[in-house]
Image (cartoon, rainbow, N blue to C red):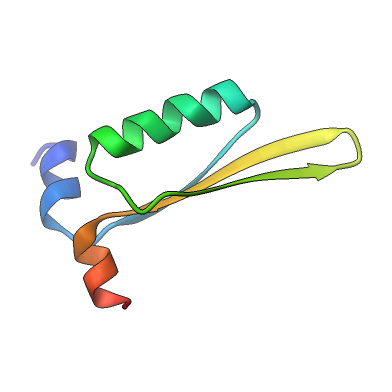
Length: 66
């Protein structure tokens, strides 16, 4: 089964961290293309280090967790 098929037919949520804002934006675009549309993006800064987190889920997952 292809990755896109899994994303479109099964409940799925993914959490990803990125080290740069540009990479986080690329990942967000990729997640959107995979029909993972409920994306929550945050920027965390602690001391000098910055992390960007993305949490995405598809409609099937959202229907399980109203």
